[in-house]
Structures are given as structure tokens and as C-alpha cells.
Length: 274
Figure 1: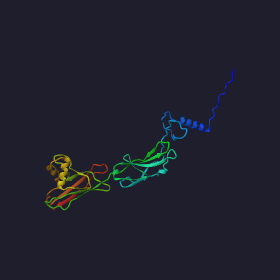
Figure 2: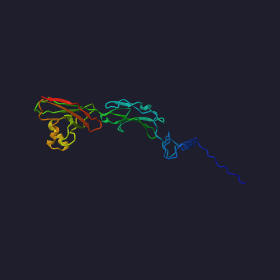
Figure 3: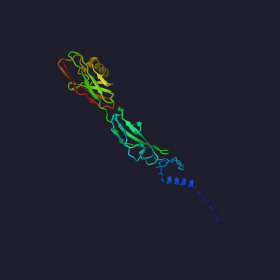
Figure 4: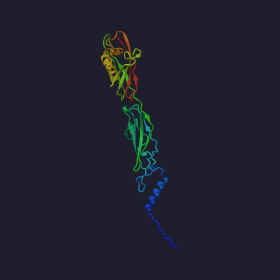
């Protein structure tokens, strides 16, 4: 009977044993999918198996905006970037401000601009750490109110049988008007002759002066009408020969073509021709 030949026993160095132990731990905790992320694992560390995919750090701190979300106001992050806690230690936090889902600024503070009116504001915390994908956490959305322009009408002293002009101003902090004006007179919105369309005068600045000639030119340009048709459309608002002892009542509505502004009416303007 032959004597069994003893097999050599492998001796592991401390480093090799540690590497195998780490690998075994990863394989034991890894999900069945080879591409699944491994929580709290730095895939750049020594001894980590090939194909390791780390999970992004998860923020444990609630991200919140402090301040009034209004044009001209400054809002800030409730928690400083250094105090944001993550699921992994050593994560560096930076902040991003989003308006309408688009990043507009980085940092802990943001001064809201007129162009942001009518949109949603959010704050996003971004966590970075070598060996891990970026982690993010976003605050709840805050609505930024639309700007409310002020529409005012001025009419100089009007004399009988004389031409007069009407000046309409659209003003407000951060307001740059763009849209059109609708005219109201004699208890109805002034319509384009022969149609149900309201007369609309284009606006691209803070002041609109409406002498008869300008009104007619604008209506002709926008609706491709003849001079006679446009003249008739403007007759309710501007007249070349004001009638003596007549009391006029007029109103305008600004209808914006941009989302940052609200549609607003002027106060009713009353004046008497003497």
C-alpha cells in the first residue's frame, strides 16, 4: 500500500488575505446583476474586483430654500454646504439654483431676476467624492409670481375741434413690456370693423402714444386693412376733431406676449372736451 503524498498548504500573506476577504465580502453582498451599484464602496480602492460599480452618495439632510421667491429678492439655502450630511463620509457639497429646470447659478444664495418671473425655483445639492458617482438631492419647487405691470393713461387738455393724443404707460419694477394693448370705449372693447376681433396695438416699450395717425398706421400694419378701415377702428379712441361739451371714457388692457407678465387693465380715464 502506497503512502499518500502530502499536498503543500498555501500560506497567504496578510495583504493577500485582506484582499481575498474584501473581495469575498463584496461578492457576498453584491446583487445578482453584475452592473448593480454597490452601496458605500469606493471602486478605486485597492483590491476591489473589476466591474465594481459604486452607488452615488445619498443626502440625508433635507434641502430647503429660505426667503421669499419674488423678483428682486435674494433666497438662500437653509443648510450651509459644509453641514449637508451624506450616506458616505468625505463628500463635498455644492449648490445649484434651477429656474424652470435649468441651472442659472451656483452657490448658497441667488437673487431672483425679472426674467425668472412666472417660473419654478429649486435648489439642488450636489455631492462629489472620488470613486463615486455624483449624488444629488433637490428641494421642493417654489413658484415665482409673475410681474404685475401698472397701466396708466394720460390725456392733455382737450379743446373742441382740435386733435388730441392719448399716452399709455406700462411700468413696474423689472417690467419691459412686450405684447399689445386692447382698447375699451363706450362700454365695449373696440372691435376691428366688420369682425369680432378686438383692436390690438402692438407694444414693445414702456410708452405708447396714440395720436390718430399712429393708431391708424399700427392697425393697417397688423391687420392689412385699408386706411379707411383702420381710421374707423381708431375713431372710438382718438379723434381729429373732438366734439365740444362731450365727456369721454376710455380704458386699456395690456395683454403680454411673454410669460413673465400678468395681463392688466388700466383704470378708466374720463375727460371732457370744452
